[in-house]
Length: 89
Image (cartoon, rainbow, N blue to C red; front, side, top):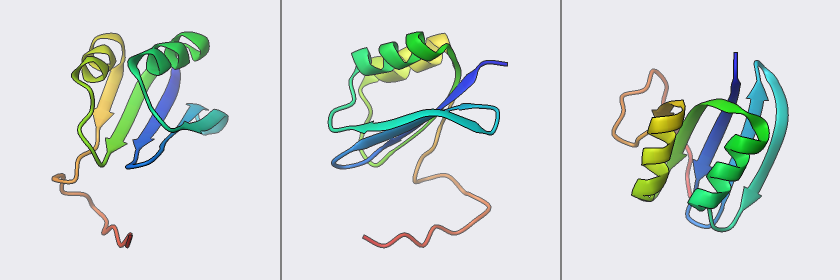
């Protein structure tokens, strides 16, 4: 089974973590998340699965790359989730 990449795109930072099963292998954050960053993470770590959440619109090239190269799941604020998010800004 391949590694999993979790990405959280916020207003000021993008945070990411790479997992091998339940084990955290690598994590970090960046101010600007680009297609080149995604390609480097995928190539360096052999990512097979991606889950991504974002508070802003994702670059269409990033969406296309994720869809073409991995199994992915895109979280959205419009989704019905089985839990309540009580995060306050």
